[in-house]
Length: 184
Image (cartoon, rainbow, N blue to C red):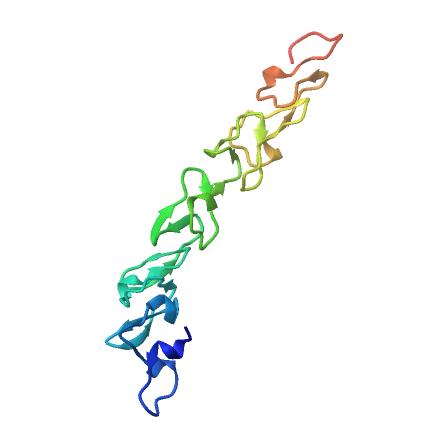
């Protein structure tokens, strides 16, 4: 039904803010941002809304990406956190999220970490950006002994006349090329 059919307005009063809720007003029919108090239409606190038909401010819940900051107002979730059901929570382990995240699935692995549990990229690999990408193996003829490496600056070349397979994690994997002997 139209808003005008749910509200009464004193004669000569202009604007929705001067309207009073009728006894049969269903909150969600008025507006998801308004509730009724003492027969007066009231806005839900900043960053909250109500889908309830109770007409009570307690029916106003924090919007997605916000949490209850007390005193009936909702605060935006910062990066590295998510707010589900109006509750502030930190992203687990080695993961982060953008501001205003509303679910744990919004958290993604930090650089140097990968997989469903955001585990450290093993030695012999690296990952330079946050997200769900897999760790990149170091190229053949090189190695990296650093776990959770965030870029190729941790990669070292094998010594002269030696070679190693892709993903090598130690200089010990650099072996003499065919026809050469000695310590690498």
